[in-house]
Amino acid sequence: MMIKKLCAVLLIASLTTPAARGAFIDASNIGVNWTVMSGEDLTVLIFLTNHASDSLKYAVDLELSLSGSGTLPTIKSIDLRASGAIFADGAQYPNPGRGIGTSNAIRSADLSGDTTTAEGLLAQVVIGTAGVAPGTYTLAPVPEGDGSFTGTKVWDLDFNEIPLTFAPGTITVIPEPSLLALSGIAALALLVFHSRRRRRP
Image (tube, rainbow, N blue to C red; front, top):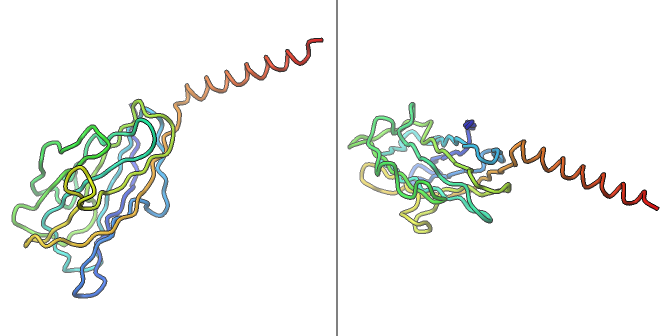
């Protein structure tokens, strides 16, 4: 099974004023609609960009949700300690996360008593599409209090939460080439059948 790697979701921590911290999670990174073939895995990289040098990060809860019609894609993993990630040297829990294998999952991490102003890779997320019908599905971080778990939160060392706002992104699942070929053959056969019926006296 081929895994497609796409740089996908942005988590942007920002300061609107020196005294007012805020963060913006953008799952629609510059309008990208990620496309994956049915049955394949899609690897989404989530990034955090600081807009303030004193944006001290100690811990994060990242809850993600997929929505749409019919059988939904699944969140196969959320890795906050991927190589080069901001929390790579910290603790990650629970293992492997709650809700993994469903359309709504959460993973948490902290820096074990330390803080960082680092920016860059926050998480690597694998989305599975086995058994999923072609269509468009929404991927979004879940606001606090809206999900199956605790929602998405970022804290400093004193566990003060950084206010978050969100924007969703989309994943389009397309048919496998074999299905497209079969559909094409069926359409051609139907066209030939109707053409022959019209020619009969």
